[in-house]
Amino acid sequence: ETGVTQSPTHLIKTRGQQVTLRCSSQSGHNTVSWYQQALGQGPQFIFQYYREEENGRGNFPPRFSGLQFPNYSSELNVNALELDDSALYLCASSFGTGGLGNTIYFGEGSWLTVV
Amino acid sequence: QKEVEQDPGPLSVPEGAIVSLNCTYSNSAFQYFMWYRQYSRKGPELLMYTYSSGNKEDGRFTAQVDKSSKYISLFIRDSQPSDSATYLCAIPSSGGSYIPTFGRGTSLIVHP
Image 1: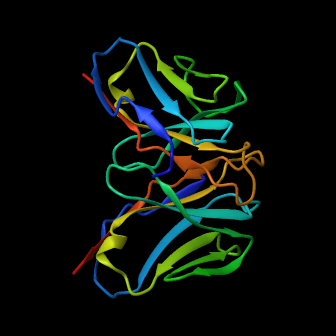
Image 2: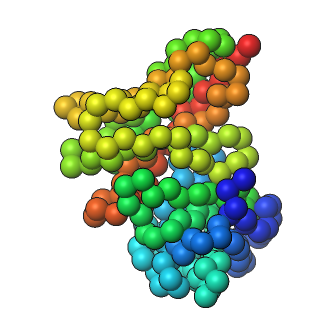
């Protein structure tokens, strides 16, 4: 167990709807990163939050947005869902924004199916 | 060209075999390389990281970097059924941060 918890574990949404995924980081961690992992692919970086500010973003459209709270938990919001958004969404926490040997710890993910 | 390329497999081996998992990367400036292991329906976990070139050993696992050919390898000795998982290589994203950019992963099956 990494101490990173995500909810919900599974959900089904309809194309065009909006979804919010939640993540509680490991105790003592102030940085949260979100990844999208399609079936048979590696995780793709969406964005990172450090002390409530966005600290880097991957190649994802603006309808993917996020938030980090004062307790360092985080939300990922996706608007106007598309079928290709069906994937495993992974949250990872770390202390600091990275560095040699600074390990990030992943949660077990939220499985999103868009129909 | 993707920053890191990896054969998806699956790779099926008998218990006790030596396993070789490989990735190629495109940016010769990278000096930090990571291997993650992902069990079915779980998040990835960091297995090993290496800095610069050469070998790094941790128990049955050895990570190797060949910078001249931009090739990274993970060797597993005396493979066990519990090693069955997807192995993801990762490099730091461009720009100097340590946010990992992952390959697509190689699925390994070790059968008894």
